[in-house]
Amino acid sequence: MDIFTFVFKDMLLDWPLGTLAAVTLIIAAVIILCLVAWGIYGVVDSWGLSKRQATGKVIGKVYTPSRISVMYVYNDALKTSLPHPIPIPEDWSISVRIIDQSASMSVTNDFYDLLNVDQPVLAEYVSGRISGGIYLKKLTRM
Image 1 (cartoon, helix red, strand yellow):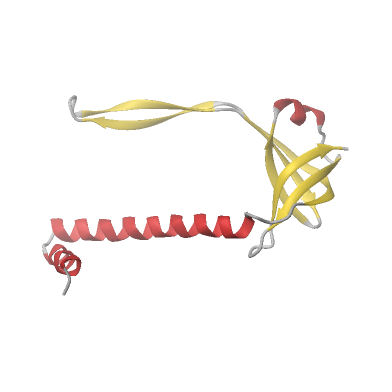
Image 2 (tube, rainbow, N blue to C red):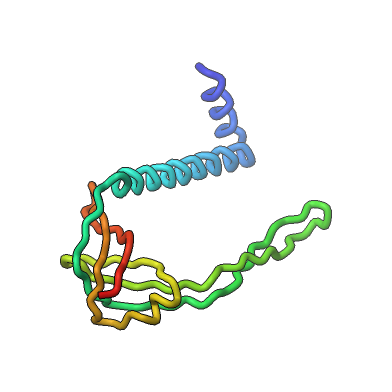
């Protein structure tokens, strides 16, 4: 029996603190593995593909104003949690329908203002290897 199995087995048998610590480690490991798998899927599905061009139609515009998110960070010296502001910048997003599929892309404020809903655009995109979904790379006004 290797050292990892021995220590992990002892943690599970040490009720309640050891068991709770072991369960927390298992849950954290599963979450990390899922995030890594999701990242690998995104890379395999969309990287290194040849770009295509097609005419699409703007189906939506979304403006998200800037905001501040607050994350509380524990300060051991003060024995309390202190707020840590995280600024989130404003975002302009355009949704486009191409070949019976839709995708969204963040654009600049000026380009956002130039486009209207139902207006045609020239879209540069790639199709996913696995998902078959489209990933927008560039939009050009027609």
